[in-house]
Image (cartoon, rainbow, N blue to C red; front, side, top):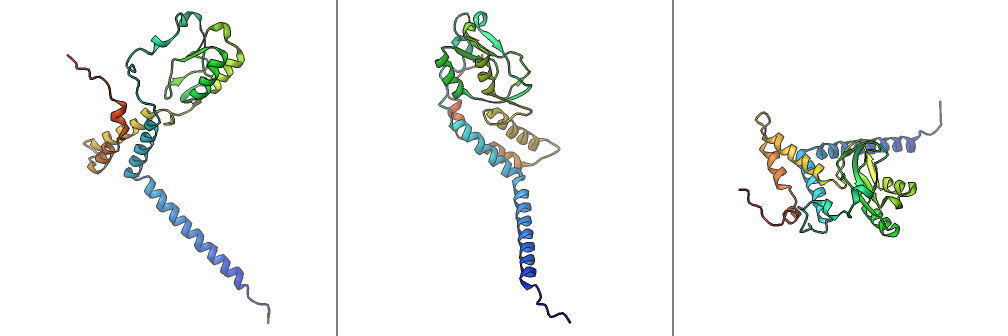
Length: 206
């Protein structure tokens, strides 16, 4: 007959760990199920857009004018042009970093693309004026400030998140998928800073 004591502590610990694992799994499944509900996705997108728009310094009075008017005279003739190092969507541009480099080097840096645009390798789009101050090191720093990836993100591209909200609302309005409880939250989630961002002189179409 075996007189060795039964491993009660080990069995109790194993049962406790099993129950804890089951509870964590149930909690994760509940969180996952809630995170993909349309109302949750709409709310998260709305808050994300609101945060991005709240970081803007306010719309410029001349925002509807041609941005090329701010370029130095003879920019297209005297600037050195180059492009990003990889193909893909522009996810973000390190404007603060470039704003610190430009005065120190006494140059003007211009972009013909913005976050959300698709660019190709060395396809142009970045210009340094004047070309006499261009260098490989300066080009490398400018390229490093441009983050390019295989897909669009909403880091500096509010249009990307707005498009998702619009698509969700349009699909809810579809005759084949009539979901009024989805379309209504989509329109209500448009953030409050939007009217401020759209303020400006009204234009009446004749």
